[in-house]
Length: 402
Image (tube, rainbow, N blue to C red; front, side, top):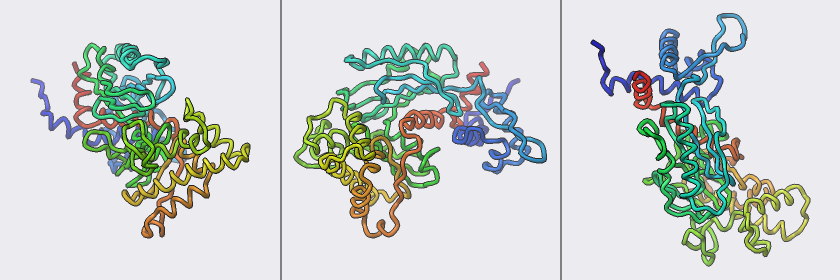
């Protein structure tokens, strides 16, 4: 008679395996010896665990190059028949669908233009690609993550201001999968996911508490504690751009007045130069910042505009440091170009905005390592967290035993 372990026993059996798989994701190319040392596993326990993960089609091993005397070790890698995640990237000028394995190796499986269509039109097209991708790897796709540059809660996109989308149910993305019971749908904000990538494998990797700031059209970010973003009660935390750090007479598309968003991006640069609002605020900002930083532009008007935005950014970050007390601040998107184009204005505003306590030892501000790649990398990391829990691994084993 076959003994079926209880759900609790199954979860306990997969606890250390969960730690190992997350380590392999965070450090692609890690050796068996390094992983064993990191998890403090004996040689016997390590061998038993890795063999079990190979049998479960979760890990594979590749021989490492010899580096001295002794028996050569092996590199741990994703099993070619292992679980996969699908990322729907709605954060870029063209939407993309990517697929990735446990170690984060990814490839694009679909892409297209938004055009002037409403979300329902192109989301239906994306849902077909997701379903086709899942059908090509039955039971292997375990999660679908949507990346959006907007306010999210659960699986709903509440507001995507720059495109005028409101109250969009992203549940459609997995609706074409015949049996979605094994597939989890996750929706994440681009700035939050970018911060997650920096905390796991980027500029904030060593920090216990980190603050991440991302500027595109407007500003978002996140606070991360021990590598986990603080997302709030409904998943909508990190909307730093809507703090009242701006001009209280200027209305924001979000419905509030005086938002910081309006002081720190391409729209702010144009307003400070006396230009009309740009049709593409990101491209406008990049062109102006590059010109000022490289010395191509020597216009006093350009410099004043960039200095004003740099001061608004530095002062706002100081306020967030005073509130959250991070060990490190990471910045991405246009924020890196703003600081580089006006470092003196930025640094002065940052220092002057800090409480005396923080000014004695200010948290360093580092450029993002992953930059434009950050949101997708963070989405994959978030999905890996979900599909490598002990419960999820027990479910993977059970589904592959059918």
